[in-house]
Length: 420
Image (tube, rainbow, N blue to C red; front, side, top):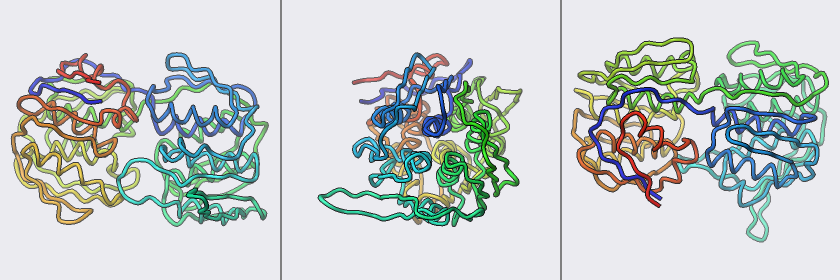
């Protein structure tokens, strides 16, 4: 599948952000520790969420999905072994470990997959679970590579993660809540999606407090029950449209996402020269008339998001001067720059983590590829600013995190068509 794009058209009007992908994935897994039905609204219709739903169904859950509403009943979940094919395609499946451990005391997890953006071992998860009284063993037999998690000892009342991993923080939270075990997590991640999970679990009967940006305290639960919860807007999707508008915004209104979780990307766009106004859940953007260079360094929240490094890297190809990108989290995240170079961008990748961009350079349409989810969205944006026609291959990679991206862009003036 691919996208055919005719570049050079301004983006005007309102583009509405879908529900948060990362919040949705974790809340789907969280339902395993709850009683009764849970209803999630504003659920994005993207392939990563579809895969998460299929995994939960294979574990035995009953699920109804209509439009953007999921109704989940996990009373009939009867397996602690994650399905191999699905789990290996979706790295987010690792967050099933915590709730399944709490419920069954044992979990079998195939070695996980996901985007090819560099090694992302489960070291932080394993170290955290071992502190929590879980034995973790890697097994390789009959070409089956998997981890086996087994609860063997009582948990400590405090654990410290070896790095501020989002999914490890969430996994330990879900384990503690499901096992009704008071636990303090030190060196915890601070991403907004974790706080979404905390709000959701507290609404379901848990007692969780964020003590600081790096410390979370899980108390003894009340009775855990299902609830109704609306997924908030996806900040990474919103940031993608922010980057697009910085280049092409006649006046683009990005609706459905709290600007408070976009402080770092908004600051970067303003430094580049975009004109931005915000209200409670709206960001209004006009393009930078003469984009200025900007140095970007990715970091855990509230720093600049690694998931927005590639769309903003594209923006910098049009800035007047030299920009430096320092990717601090994922080894292969700069590979999209090679695709942009094939379109005419002037880039120098000096290491797996460092690159310079000289601009402005006009981009010309060509055949380019989606090397990972966020890079794929960036290739679509590159097609929007390029001269002539661009064909973006592996469109299905983009579908993992962006709901009907071509339809949203058409509504605000883009010339884009999906081709089977």
